[in-house]
Length: 198
Image (cartoon, rainbow, N blue to C red; front, side, top):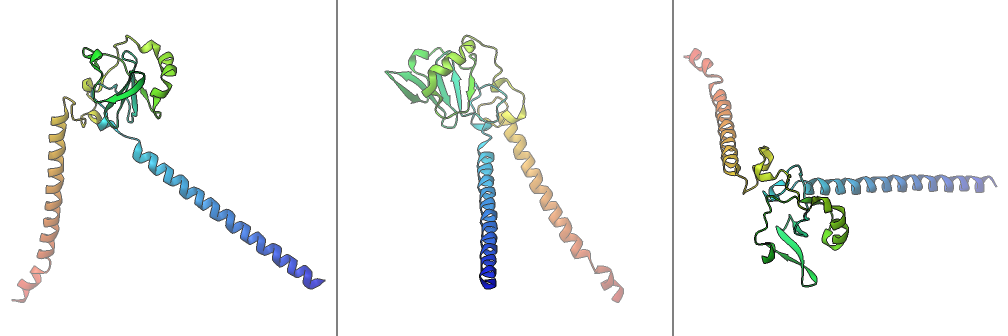
């Protein structure tokens, strides 16, 4: 009976250690999975340089603009307009001809960071009806925040690009000077001893 009792305790102890290891392994797996999701979100978060200069200021990341006055959407990552025509949603690089006089710089836009918001168009149309006819939104083109200067069509883009080019050149020159300065120090080391020996 004593041997059976020992065997049973050993069996339970082994099961306990196995369960602890499995729980620890599962926790490590979950932590690794969570950190991968965080990395993916961080790399996805900023797309300022993709935003059009007629977009509103204040957003580091934009998927879609809803344009209430046109009842259309703009997909920022692909630079495409999405509008309803002929019984279906269409995509194009510009709004349809019926909007040839439409001024994107003067109309208010709503940022929507959801997948394919045009499929819930009726919800957004009701939710953002107050944006129709409004023209008081500050747009990226008129912003003096440096973070928008990297956008190609921003009025300050060329100046910003030149400043960045000069800064890069200065950093390169400083590294070269530091490298040569350190090299020169190494060459001087020990010269005094050579003169003393003559």
